[in-house]
Image (cartoon, rainbow, N blue to C red; front, side, top):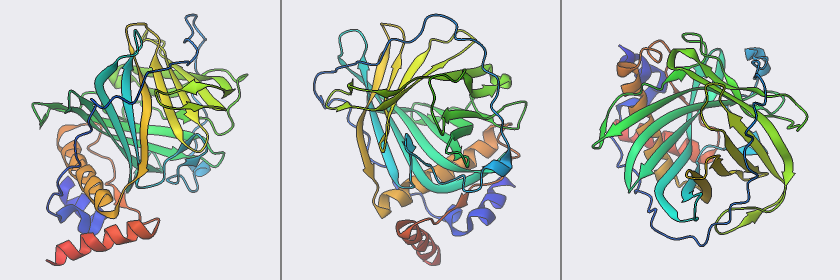
Length: 319
């Protein structure tokens, strides 16, 4: 039933034959010596994080993610390479985040569908749908996630799935619209059904010399995410006009993810990514109770390349 409903919503997109997946990232290429200069995460309890005011009427153009610190236009792909905090050696862990041409309505708000894949030793371990939206003040929110585990190259369920408005889950802010170091902590994500509670606060709005292995950035926004449920805090650094450039675990034996690539996908690559995401949603409807009653994703042609992707989908259907 859900497959049929999704097919109607996406028109031609759901009945295409699968496009081959994109090439596996190569984590063995050494981008140079690491230079981690993110300030150390806090060790003291920064206090509670009350939920921010979430009102669907405040999201008039919500699927357009153009916050200066989180610019994710459709067809954008970010690649982050893990480096060991202790010694700076490259680790076989790569994260690839793709902004697709698809949107999905969650809790009354249209979200941009992001596709995140976690690779280790050249093998995909997680393939996730991430739903983000931007409010009228420029703040980027997360309204849910479907992180499908992969075991021996086969889907293995998504016990960590959550959707805002379902089983008590609440949306939270990823990047504030007007970051301020003096503001109290705010909610990042809350899903009591899976024991998820993340909070965040702004550490610095103009940090200089935040360095990835091959490049340094100035005027970076530093946000610390922490959990009252005792998960270790993580510092995120965002460069204006670029987006996420680093994410560092607090513990010394952890890892730091550095931005190692940011590019725009070709039309063929966008088509491939969109189709993989459509297949992922099909599995979500079948395997996840929290996902089951959500509205299907829709194709949102926001630029000329997206229109070309739409035409290619229609052309394949005709043949």
